[in-house]
Length: 229
Ligand SMILES: C[S@@+](CC[C@H](N)C(=O)[O-])C[C@H]1O[C@@H](n2cnc3c(N)ncnc32)[C@H](O)[C@@H]1O
Image 1 (tube, helix red, strand yellow):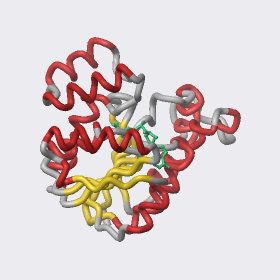
Image 2 (image 1 turned 60 degrees about the vertical axis):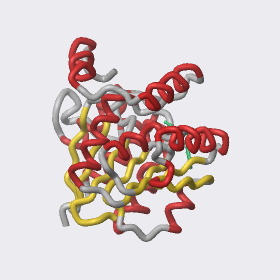
Image 3 (image 1 turned 90 degrees about the vertical axis):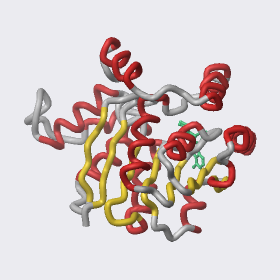
């Protein structure tokens, strides 16, 4: 949790509960120590699908469909799930069939970065939740294929396989604010590849005039960027 425990408990308690199939997905994730997006961020995905009246959602890194199930709860007409682990995708097919949602899913096995090249969009919502080093490339791959008012959400921008303190220094240097104000240089140069990947991603969306970005400290931290022109 990025939020203080009591705040996170508040958000969870006031948010939507799991459906029966999502509860099974969550149990499966716990059993296999699989990092899905969690219910607090899931509620945000549901909201994004609902607010954009989403026809098409594209996901980079779908696992067995937990995040997709939230978009579908938000009435997305279609979710394109990408996953290079065939077993995870098969498990996703099973869960979606059990939930009666399979006909609104397109299951794409393979590298999401290649799969996305086969789609022209328009995408109403895109979830980036695969390899952190490739987030900025994923954004490049979809930015022109987003519908006007479309949204890109990127998970793990505050937590996961990243060095939060190095990232905090980086974003404060970029913003010229906070304790790091006045520092120079690329703070995460010494951090791991995943941290640099998230830093590059935040620089890319933050520096793109066609997008407005807000980071929500739910789950592992979601950066939500709306296309405004
Ligand atoms: C953090 S999990 C995402 C789970 C999913 N979004 C959810 O919350 O339920 C990341 C998943 O992305 C997959 N993945 C990573 N890089 C990928 C790539 N380049 N193409 C397809 N899948 C990828 C991994 O196998 C893993 O299942």
